[in-house]
Image (cartoon, rainbow, N blue to C red):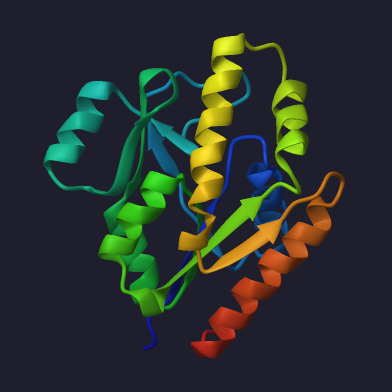
Length: 197
């Protein structure tokens, strides 16, 4: 059986990755959307096991030592996030298409483990930096320090956009157009591998 396809979706905070992935989830039910592990506290309305498995820092660190993660990172405000290796390898062996939002560090780690013929990386970028600043500010009150940190992260991520197989622009009010471009890339690459998708 042909191995599956692992699609990583990255981009700076506030670029609209979550919205695009929510549409992918709704319109591509045959894809596998992995549940991340995190040590952060659940936000109001978040259900354990839907988007995140909420685990203790002690357990997370133990799993790191046991080699259970495909990729992991210590990110915003000291919380750990990671992708478990076993569900990824099982889905790829079963010829499935996996779609996963990851940060720049996660994408780089995944590229060290997953064979290139089973991997597609997509970077979602804003039309311009001022659009991104407006989106970040629109998310709610945050300190100048937090805004500066997010913008510095965004600059680093935008500078690394060339590392990705595809770059798709998410313009204001154009999430559906961005979804269509991302969906076309996924379908085209899955079809090229002979996957029923």
